[in-house]
Length: 89
Image 1: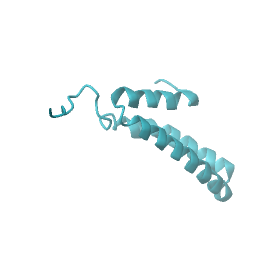
Image 2 (image 1 turned 135 degrees about the vertical axis):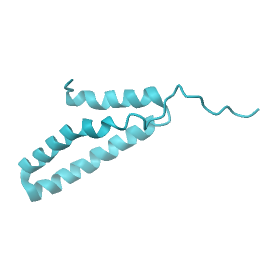
Image 3 (image 1 turned 90 degrees about the horizontal axis):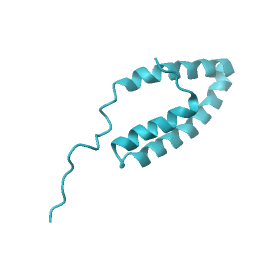
Image 4 (image 1 turned 30 degrees about the vertical axis):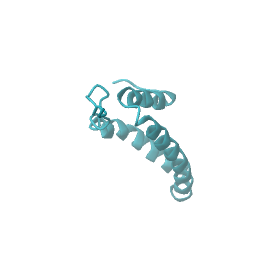
């Protein structure tokens, strides 16, 4: 099992999406930005209710569960090598 450092995850994910489809790359950036803003707000709210230790525990569980959840989504991003509809002349 390969262990990734946190700063490697986003560039690897964007590279994976960009290699398969140019159309999804802006969406990947947008989803990343939205998730960053929402997670900061959610972490602050959770810290008020469950404490900092609870927030760190939830984050650790999500980071450990993410590879298992994403393993089945390999076919979601369309492959760039598939034939595209050609414009009519």
